[in-house]
Image (tube, rainbow, N blue to C red; front, side, top):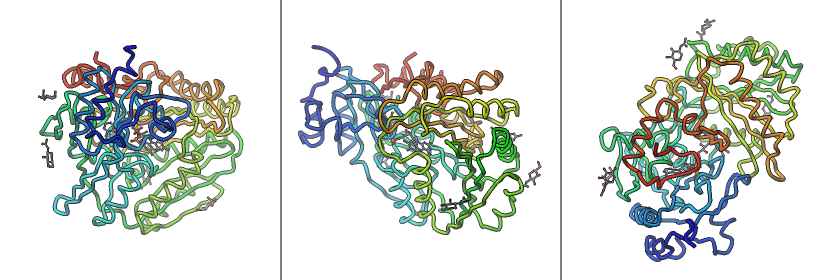
Length: 474
Ligand SMILES: Cc1cc2nc3c(=O)[nH]c(=O)nc-3n(C[C@H](O)[C@H](O)[C@H](O)COP(=O)(O)OP(=O)(O)OC[C@H]3O[C@@H](n4cnc5c(N)ncnc54)[C@H](O)[C@@H]3O)c2cc1C
Ligand SMILES: *[C@@H]1O[C@H](CO)[C@@H](O)[C@H](O)[C@H]1NC(C)=O
Ligand SMILES: *[C@@H]1O[C@H](CO)[C@@H](O)[C@H](O)[C@H]1NC(C)=O
Ligand SMILES: *[C@@H]1O[C@H](CO)[C@@H](O)[C@H](O)[C@H]1NC(C)=O
Ligand SMILES: *[C@@H]1O[C@H](CO)[C@@H](O)[C@H](O)[C@H]1NC(C)=O
Ligand SMILES: *[C@@H]1O[C@H](CO)[C@@H](O)[C@H](O)[C@H]1NC(C)=O
């Protein structure tokens, strides 16, 4: 019929993977949706034209050529944790390049760089780096997220204030471009492609492997949790103000990570101090947060045990990393757009009165800044270098689609800050894709969008690498 679903040559794709039928699946396959496609956010069902499982960069190149010939969109899938299934194309009819076979790893003790296959999950990377010589890199707290989608959009996590975010570790990539050539991109080779890959990768190619700078894994780390009686609206607002005051002190050590978590009946402050218990205690958190009801620390001297603990904590926060119906939003705050006390009051007032339509909602304020902000804004396409902290909100429905009530609640939280802080420059984190944003690319890439549009026109003029909020051609 000439629609995109049937337009891609199935024989072409089969040839591309060396005529091995186990390396490509089409919609007619038994259990296609649940096994081959396997969407993460059940609120965004999507049926790709094909899911491929290539084993080499040359096979990816051939797959991209088939798709380009048929004018069909392509997206890579690494860990499959896009909030709106963009690794599956985000809309029907794309060719998916599932990178599960790209698990290669090597470590060079001289340069201390590691080469990592783009289908590797963060938890596996931690183990491989640590085993290779006690090394580590920054990344987020979920071990099931893939490096492919993480180190190409940002990658925010507890060690970012010291080391920068995941993409700041990337020294070079091997990438398959829209014209199906396989190139290495770095600061000196294909620098425009490299700029684009570090923040907007899904719009520009398929990274097959990353060469990353590593760090010595921290020896000692203190994980802390301050709990609070849920109290009344104003006491919660006061605790938030104390947190914002503390994390916005210009001399705050980069060894300190922190998040303030709000959920139904819950307010807590938690994070890590990457150093000794004595150094942590010198911060005197308990005196900074007079309302706290309990103070809990665990001292780790084992990096892998600490990262495993993040995964567990995240599971508790989000109700599990398994596929579910959910909606999520983000909003950055910089040291020039701290939240005025009156707006904090209004926010907590709104939280206490809003109809949320679910008990499974979370609003997390995440301290970032530090080394992320050391990198000039135009050095990589990631554009929110000045974010001192992020608001991330989530709502989960275990039974069916997210309701209109819940959706409105999360949108109104963001609108409250946007409307009451008219002089602040906001935006959205490209790692937490929000399909409801009408101007996603502007929100994600801000001051770097114009350059990205120019690069897109030069390297992907047919818009092969596309999802509903990818960098547009113009
Ligand atoms: C439970 C959970 C916890 C999370 N925690 C954090 C966190 O702590 N910090 C944080 O920053 N983010 C976090 N995220 C967001 C996460 O970083 C992004 O969703 C990320 O894009 C997922 O990458 P992926 O490879 O798993 O997903 P995928 O769905 O496979 O890919 C996501 C996007 O990246 C593209 N992509 C994937 N691989 C490549 C490649 N090799 N080359 C080019 N493009 C590629 C895909 O096409 C798609 O558009 C979390 C997400 C979830 C679901
Ligand atoms: C990319 O870099 C790797 C490792 O340095 C090298 O083996 C490979 O030949 C390079 N590929 C290209 C296309 O330059
Ligand atoms: C940081 O500066 C504040 C004053 O702005 C001071 O009260 C605090 O003790 C300092 N903290 C550290 C760790 O030096
Ligand atoms: C302390 O930590 C334990 C487990 O690490 C947790 O179960 C408990 O609720 C925490 N208590 C407080 C007061 O934070
Ligand atoms: C505010 O943040 C910027 C980085 O975004 C930093 O350069 C500057 O020093 C910070 N100012 C203060 C007062 O903390
Ligand atoms: C493929 O695209 C890249 C980036 O635009 C370009 O440098 C290269 O010359 C192209 N290769 C071919 C064979 O056209």
